[in-house]
Image 1: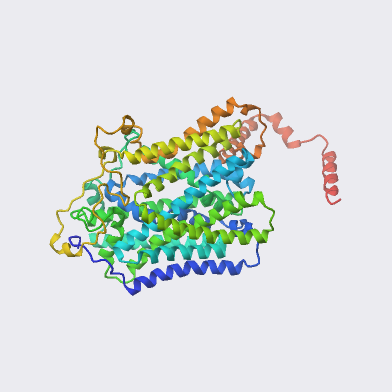
Image 2: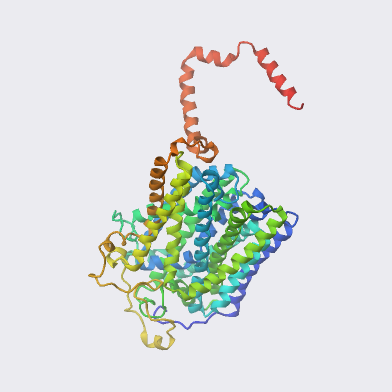
Length: 616
């Protein structure tokens, strides 16, 4: 089976039915919430779900929103090409949830704000808030365009599905239920889409396991092919993926998403209590690890099926991102409806991310750019929120159109996500944890952090790291049957020099590479985010100290207080236990504690007085 290439376009009516059904279900949720909440006209209800959501749907929505189609298509391809070390992201996820629930969640929840950037004005000044908002809008629109376009491209070449039909239908359905139903619709459609994503993954895994004769052959194939490269504890920061780059770099990237990204914060703040919000983060952790492990195992399945004949080197697909859809068409093409389920899974990944972004962009624009400058009724603002959802939906579709033209800038846009997220994380950390940080320090830090991150990522793009740093694993084509493949080849472009769906800079002559190319520019792309964060914090603290930051007076609610953390309560609980043990030995203390005040009647009398004075 793996010896032959496939004809594209074996998508049948049943597949289209499954795909259309998923889009329709998503749209129906929007209509339902628009109808159910028609009495509620405030922007708070539209953008925050009225702050009455419970932990379970929110946790699933948190998981689905950043597990985009890029996860479904790229993670398995990553494992196929570089090995399963990305499973270490599970460690990064655990650290992320701990930091988010202990540091960022309590303050945001206490302030009860719709936009996270509102905090920047409360803590620093309006300029900082404006900068944060603009950074976020730029980053989100860029990212969303890619999320719509990348899967459409991969699926178009494999299943023959119409490219622009797919792009526009995704955009329109998303915009439709965001505009009608607001955050509640986004959260509940995410729950449904997460189910579809898992079903799609499981269908591929189960079919591959059946084909290869069990789970053990797949694991032993991956072992022999060097795909189970978990014991890589190399501390070199220039190595692309090692235990350290993934756990440290990954933690920074994900904290910048969960801790401060409007899309995620907006969700857990809409829970009905802090406990629900914390719980939603920890349940979401299970979902994240589940999807990650599914995608890693799917990558091992691809390797096991194509170990003797790599379709990418053989030239039957034009990018590794098409490996997953290629496998689906190869092993499930004879089962009508199953390829449709997989395509629906990929699109569910896209829909959930795009709808999240649209809702978050609308919230940020209303709260940060419109509310501070105008006096409008809640009803008007609610209409404006809906109008903005519509506008941002159209913008994201337009961005997908741009993404199709700028093949080489795709990777730049993906790293812009880390490049902008890192400095923003540094800015918020400065506000939460450094009482002496002032607005001068914050703005200077933010700008210098952004400049350095951009410098590193641009350098890395111009001078890609050498193969000994990225270490792609061997792929074979010995088992390929090229004679039948000649007429069935469906690559749209010549093979790229570097295996990504992104065209990269041409190979450089070693003499032309500047001095910084082999250490500074060759840093693992996962370190772009920590560099930005650390520079913002250090520059911000220095500038604040020199510009009289120690003299400013701050409201304690804007900082992280020790009472906010779970650790404080655990410490208190154990301390009380120890004190109680010690107290049992001291009889005089015990006597005093049991008897209490010397005049109980006086005490009761006072309490009664207070009680009676309440109603007056």
